[in-house]
View (tube, rainbow, N blue to C red):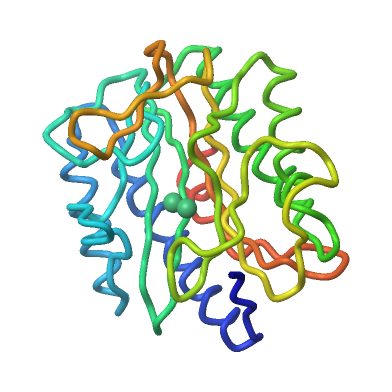
Amino acid sequence: MVHYKTEEEIDILRENAILVSKTLAEVGKHVAPGVTTKQLDKIAETFIRDNGAVPGFLGYGGFPATLCLSVNDMVVHGIPDGYVLQEGDIISVDCGTVYKGFYGDSAYTFPVGEVDAQTALLLKTTEESLYLGAAQAVDGNRTGDIGHAVQSYCEARGFSVVRELVGHGLGRDMHEDPMVPNYGKPGSGKKLREGMVICIEPMINAGAKEVYEKADGWGIATADGRKSAHFEFAVAVRKGKPEILTTFDYIKKIKEY
Ligand code: MG
Ligand code: MG
């Protein structure tokens, strides 16, 4: 069941989205060789609480941390630990908040120092596909229009789209209807209506699309061990033009990725 939002509720979701955006930038400032994922998690938790909100992932379904931190072949849901970031790694930082009874949820994949050209292309392509998907989030379109925009762009560059995990509605719960796959056919899937707020989150693999679950029951990694990128926006479906609630502007002010 889709929960349509009032303008007042969208205002709160926007506040959450901006706080998540700022948190991602705060974490991004500290992404560097020699830093552990656990240290990054602490930075995010402190920042969110200092801003009067609560980490949205901590305790969600039993998840033990503030951030999902997924390095290299990890697609999503990596648990922060003692892993020390290395030059050439990439790290997906996925962050959630709860503020005024609603959730925030967005993600950005950072390079650690310098990455090779193919990895840089993977990050650029995945981020660009997110904007192309978001552009389809208008009243009257369907979820398949979003998925098709993401899939066709990424596959044309030789990358593959994870099927097992998808975007979702966002509101008083972190995962609401509709599901928003990153693949699909134009004109297929759920119809999008003004008042829907959705998270679009392409998970794009450098190699094959297959993934598996780690022994910890959380982490999802590529079957072939190659790298995977993940970017996520919260978007309000509007008539004519979508409203992207998340912004990566705070991140781009730190460094031109
Ligand atoms: Mg997320
Ligand atoms: Mg999400």
